[in-house]
Image (cartoon, rainbow, N blue to C red; front, side, top):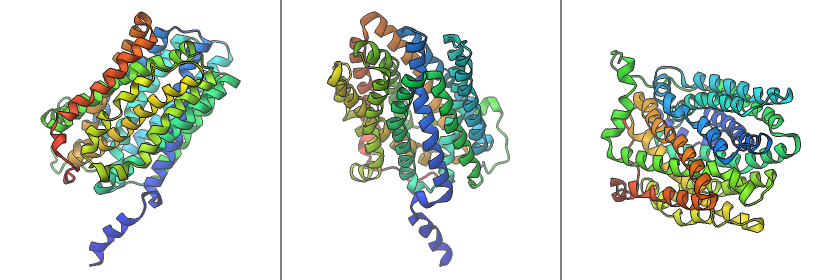
Length: 422
């Protein structure tokens, strides 16, 4: 009797009061602040300090995402075969060291675009391994029926960091310079590493068979699982299309706000932060929205409904018209949060535990591997057509991604299926 009630009592404890989840949540909240602040500061350094052109800034964005194309599948294999927590700690320490090198080089007057490309690219490699391990660690810390709640809490932290990080990063860059501002962001990664070191997760699931699959075969097992699963395949195509056009928008964002809308660097940070409000609210209400709409139905509803609001971004004008850009960005942020919370929870429930790292890596490889193409597409389109017409194209392209999930079996489902047995 006692043993059967114990898990139920544990489940009723709020996630924020469960030690390991609280450590993960707190550390990643601070870590995300560093990521979001540096994501604005680095393009500002390129565009404002180093006078980079639109296409050069887009190359910087591409350098950050290109590692996903080459390192995602190996990262999935590593995450399935080695301790995910220790892998994440190593990545945090490496990212802190890389970002700290920028202000050091800037102080001696040697900061150049090629150096930024190298730092951003290496930082991207570490982020690939961190991301895959991160998405595979959560199911070891919370039960399957609380994955949506756990993913939502972590996503709220990401959007809270998006709300504060860019504004603080932009403001500090305007006062003390972008290079020096990055020095402060390294502390966020160090805090994240410390909190991860305090987590004591249960041992990861391993295949019951002692057979060791050759690395060459194991690398593609996650891809094969996704290809045979019609819903996972549809969500993969949807997320990839959304990422391509969404990153094309991101590549244009800083040059568009600085040069077309004449916003100061500090204002750029505020506008980007204001756009995160939509995601913050969506993440905070994700549990309730999923209960009302349906945890599976939410995947396609989140993609389809906010689409028309994306067109507010190219409709923005200088001055108070910047609010239109913030509203459009908030709609995109809300879509991304609800879609990702529901999708990641679905993927974590239907994937065998011993394959989760590689299935996650398959998504990361294709979804994020296509991002550099989106950044280059946005830069090229903005350079040839102009930034405002380019943003119209990227807004419509982002909305079109909904077609993949609206036409999938998800349309006939309300809630997520039972968890895959461990």
